[in-house]
Amino acid sequence: MKKQDIKILLVDDEPDILEILSYNLSSEGYQVYTAKNGVDGVEKAKRKKPHLVVLDVMMPEMDGIEACEVIRNTSGLENTIITFLTARGEDYSQVAGFDAGADDYITKPIKPKVLVSKVKALLRRLKESSKDTDDILKVGDIEINREEYKVINKGEVVILPRKEFELLSLLASKPDKVFKREVILDKVWGQEVVVGGRTIDVHIRKLREKIGDDHFKTVKGVGYKFVL
Image 1: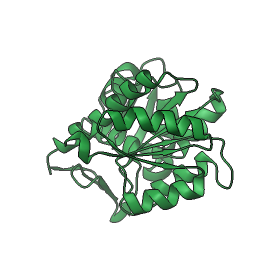
Image 2: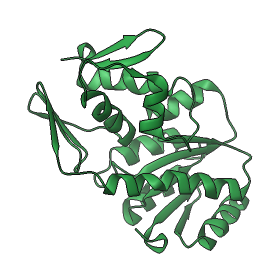
Image 3: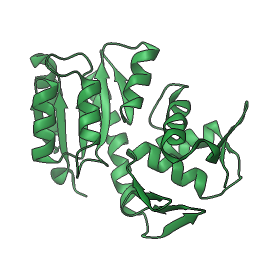
Image 4: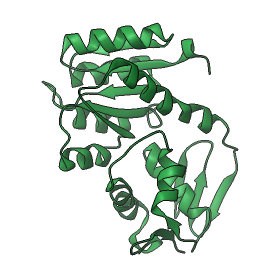
C-alpha cells in the first residue's frame, strides 16, 4: 500500500499538538484527518475509515478509552490500528487502554520525528496482514479465518480486536506448545513497538473471557500455551 493511500486520524483536544503532528505526518505523504474530541473522532473514524487512529486519553465529551471501544465495535473498523497518545503513563491507564482494544501506547511529550518513526512501525502491520493467506485454522470447536480476521467458537462468531486475534492465532497455531513471553511480544507486537509488561496478561484475560478459560494455560515464569 502506498503512503498516499494510508489514512491517519489524529484525535486530541490540544490544537497545537494536532497542528504539529498533522504537519509532520502529512509531510510524509499520509492522508491525515484531525478531531478535537472523542465524539468528533468517532464520527470521523466512521466516515473516513482510517488505517491508523492516534487517540489522546483525556478529552472532553468522550475520553479516548470510550472512543476506542466504540471504534473497535464499529463495523469496518475492527482491524484499524489504534494507539494512545497521552501524558498519563500510569499502569492502570495503560491497562485500561489495552482493555479497550488499543494496539499501542505512546507517552507525551514525544518529538515529531520519533512519532513518525512509531507510526511507520505500526503501519508495517498493514503490510504483514496483507501477506496473510486465506487458510482457515481449525482447532477443536474453534475456527480461525486469518484473512477475514474472524473467529467462530462453537458455531458463534466472536469479534476480537486485532491484537487479541493475532495472539489467539499464534497460540492456537501450535496447541500445547509453550510460547515464551518474549516470543509472543515479538510475534504479536513486533520489536519496534514497546509495550508494558502486563500487556500480554491483559490480552490473555480478554481471550479467556471470550473464548474460554480452559483453552489458555499460564506456565509460570515462561509464558502461555493453548490447550484443547
